Length: 211
Image 1 (cartoon, helix red, strand yellow):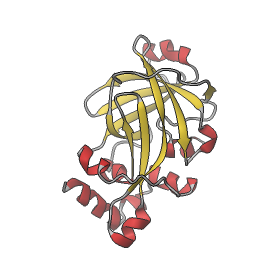
Image 2 (cartoon, rainbow, N blue to C red; image 1 turned 180 degrees about the horizontal axis):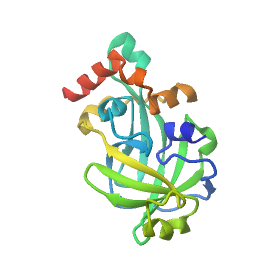
Image 3 (tube, one colour; image 1 turned 90 degrees about the vertical axis):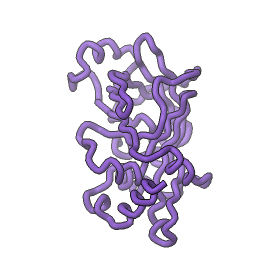
Image 4 (tube, one colour; image 1 turned 180 degrees about the vertical axis):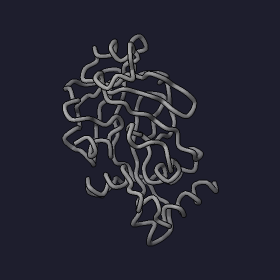
């Protein structure tokens, strides 16, 4: 379940970490914004350029977000770099507790997660990396802040800023939603060593870096 949800959702979910409830307010100036690749602890940060070339998250300053994936089939035929939306939603940030409450309003990779709220605690913010810990409920922030490295308090996720200009990625976003299957989306979100070594992926990286 977690792998499918992370493939599309801005926050992702470990099994059992979904809690019902709408997000009712949005931040005027979210504490971080930009284009990121969402990494679980086991993913590491290797091949970040290739991973971002395959899938990335756009977090906006008003709290809204979208996740996109590369149309790899289109690129294999036409060599055009095109990104399609996988999921989108909204987040609310509470500065006092550093808790994000995020809801997917549309998710092609995990439709069951639409309309549900997930929570995480922002533990550190830097220019190119945002560290968070997913929690079961908004009131779990205190345990995380006491010891964010404790595996018993939540599931660590990091937002790694993509090493491309915003223009290079955003100018290639299509207004046509993704038609990929959940399994295809998961393969892009959790690329195998074979996919990362695919010559087409290297060509996409080259095209994005050249702008």
